[in-house]
Structure formats: structure tokens, C-alpha cells
Image (cartoon, rainbow, N blue to C red; front, side, top):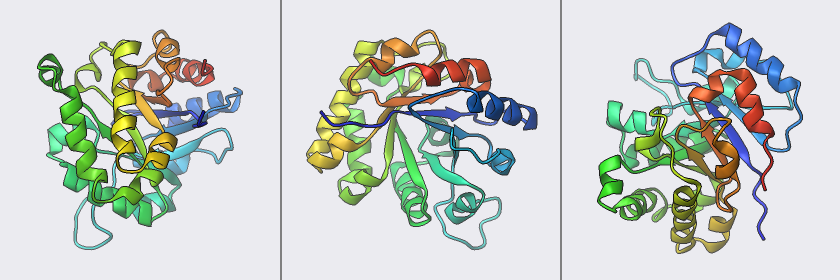
Amino acid sequence: MTFRRPLIAANWKMNGNRELVQATATMLQSIDCPHEILICPPVIFLADFPKSTKYCLGAQNTSSEKAGAFTGEISADMIRAVGADYVILGHSERRSLYGETDATVLQKAQQAIAAGVTPIICFGETLSERQQEKTMWVLAQHLDAVYAAHPDLLARTVIAYEPVWAIGTGLTATPEQAQQVHAFIRQHLARIDQHAAAQVRILYGGSVNAENWQTLFSQPDIDGALVGGASLKPAEFAAICQMAKE
């Protein structure tokens, strides 16, 4: 059986302050966790985190351009320079609020990889798409748009399945629903690169908290979590990080 080291990632979104940085860093320093822990605060707080072997850092977005006259943008080289090892790309909020497409996500992923930053690429279906039983079709379209013509990216990225209907709503997929989708993602990607598909980490994101995470994490194809609101509570996030993969 292929071993994939679990990754527990915190997405603070547009939340947090220096007090939360300190509280989170202190809490994570105090725990023992066999998993990889990732904190993705607003980018201005990256440099405020003390260097630690207990966690790594990431950004929530990056530019699709390397440099130039792009007011307000931050490049992959820049986020790398302030400590980002990972970057979240294609989150449903970026897609719905700012019109990001798979083509945009692909450009950003290529910039990130060139800068030495690992992309966490998000995919998911809306409630109406799930109700119409289009989940797998929608995901296949997204996956092919990014990976079919660029199979080399598969070994250099992390994937996050985030059912759009479960983000910030308090709803979450059942463990069985999540496993079904994660298994489909892995099987679909195996058509592109069987070895890389077996190795790629697939995270679940969608109202993850300390109460529901253990049952989700017990599923064989769920390799970690993309945690939103619960990551703003240091004690709860630490509890999630310490849960074992059964």
C-alpha cells in the first residue's frame, strides 16, 4: 500500500491578526503530530510566524504572472521569499468571486512550481451539480483541464476536494460521500499517470472540525484536510492535527 504523509492545512482566508499568529504558533509548538501541518494566513502575516520544524507556511493565492505592471498582485517568487512552501489555488471563492478559471489556475500553478512553491489545487461541485448527479463529470472536466496536457504537474501538486455546498455552511459530506469522490479523483488521474495518481495527496475541505474529522480521516483516499473556520481556533486546530490516520 502506498504511503502518503497526511497534510493538515489551515486556510485562514481574510481573517486573523498578529495575536492569532502567536497563539497558533505557540499551540503548535506544544503538540506532537506525525502529520505535516501547514498554515496559510493572509500573506502579510507569513513573516510573523517563528521558524519551526512543527509546521510549514503557505499563501492563499499568487499571480499568474512572474513580474511587471500588475498593480496589487503578488508573485510566486515573492511569496516564496517570505516563507511560503505551499500556495492554495483555485479555491471556490476565487472561482466564484473573482472569475478564476482552470486556465488561470494552471498558469498560477506553473508559476508556483517554477518558484519552488507546491500548489494545492482545489476542485469541487456546487449543490445543484450534486443534486443533478454531475459531481464526477464536473470533477473530470476540472482535472483534465489542469493535468491532461501537463501530466508532469501531478507529481508536483496536492489536490483538495472541496464540495462548494459544504464550504462555510456547516454542512459536510459524509465520510462515504467524500471517499467516493476521492477514490474517483485518484482513479481518473491514474489514466494520466498511474504512479503519480497513487502518490498524490488528496485533501478534503468543507466545514472540517474537531467533531467530524476523525470519521472523514479514516477513509483510505482522504490524505488530509483543508481547514477553514476551525483553523482560527488554535486549540481546535491542534486537536484536528493530532488525530491519527486509522
